[in-house]
Image (cartoon, rainbow, N blue to C red; front, side, top):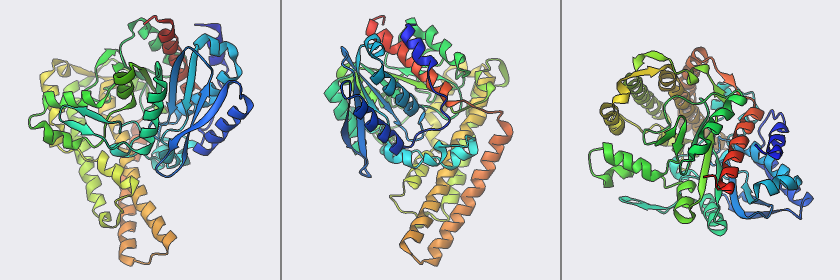
Length: 468
């Protein structure tokens, strides 16, 4: 690794908190003021709630590179990377020369959603506090999943303003390299990339362990994932999900695609139009050593996956039962409600494609590793607990709105209070189970930034030097 890269990694601050959207905006404005010869700040659009979306342009290299944070508003690890990296780029001419890109940096893409997460950005960093203050929008409200697409029977052209702004930026700069700064909540490190770069797989695999982060050896996020190597996958656009359902679902795809509420992602959009290479380095805030344990467990991988599906169906039914208490009083533009409905939709019928995959693929008949069992039976509940928390916030936000308006409707207030009580009970039950059964550790923010930054440098350098 180049010496300038090593120095960059050594100098990462010991961050203890995540920045708010307003703090990021002010920092970008200050950077542009202090380094006008190498950096500029411009607005690419506005959010649905009229917050400006800022983009930093730094340097004048031979190819364009695009980096963006908060593609999902609950994923701020990348924002701290961008905060550090943008200032280092502006100050360090040697670093700009070594990379030879013109950098376009959007720190907070889903700014509106990020503001709904900011109550956990400053800690304490426990899974209960994280979930209690969590927000992630439904698919059709996600900035990185409403790009237009026409693929077979799937047609989507309802891009939200944030997506349209990023789309225009991509069209204007035609990036050679895109670093999409997503992150997971629980688990280990894994990657997505536009096409395989086998020459650097070993390099990437070594990075997380340097920072005390395990590899994710559990199940992939989706059964549609194409695996290039351990924990390294092909970028998962909506067409891959479509093909998976087409292969394993019986029925008319015109009907099946109705369950797909969003569109495509930035990685697919940029590859199709400009052959851009997109990297994602997914990292957890929390991990349990079992996520990296490849020893055999006491059940098969198929049994673990089936148990996960059964648990998910049961919890979805419970969530919908709780929702009945106050559903008629929850506004249809309540973003927490829309998310709850989207993330508790699956029934036994919806799992048909995955069940067929389990029956057809003999690898699922083998013993599950400890990591695979842990991922299926406990990590899956971590993500379902978040839905209970958003159901709680849906009711709380409606009550707060009543108070703000001075609305005096006893029946409505009692229904919402009952919704708060029942969803709080469900949330406490599942978080107690997780706190008792997970030996989780919190990954320091500096380490998370280090992993994402070093992996980004490896790939950016690989693409620039044409080793790929």
